[in-house]
Length: 172
Ligand SMILES: [Zn+2]
Image 1 (cartoon, protein in one colour):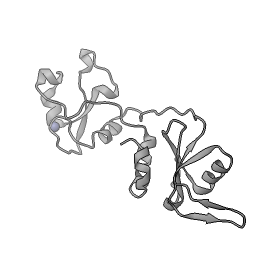
Image 2 (cartoon, rainbow, N blue to C red; image 1 turned 90 degrees about the vertical axis):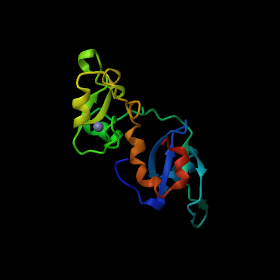
Image 3 (cartoon, protein in one colour; image 1 turned 90 degrees about the horizontal axis):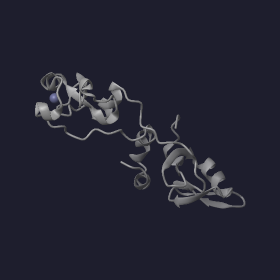
Image 4 (cartoon, rainbow, N blue to C red; image 1 turned 45 degrees about the vertical axis):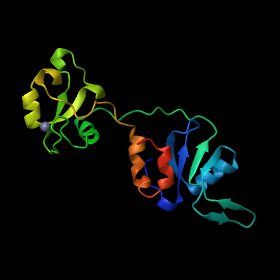
């Protein structure tokens, strides 16, 4: 999804297993429908008439075949961790612009540099926790760290503001 398609003409394309794949314009969607490669799941964006035919404009279509595209989480980086944690320290819940990346189980204790072992921490919390586990430091994590959803879902946010009929197809 590199370019944004005019909001009213955008069609959400689902994979055969109902996972969101991408957004296309309605012309592309109608070609897929006419070729029998997709089915309409949601209408409701008006209609088009040509000399010989009439189409309801699709809003959500589903491919009849499976497109293999793994749903990868974003690459692990400080920035992506802060975005995932909404720039909140995961220990004291304060929003901060000076966050640090905390390894929940410290690396020297065998903790990994993976999505389920990293959390945003403000400087005071990081200093307090030092090289200890949350249990040792008696500090509680706000949420259990895990990999965030694929960027593909994040990119859909722009449309979901307006296209409410898409929301039920897109994991939160
Ligand atoms: Zn904090």
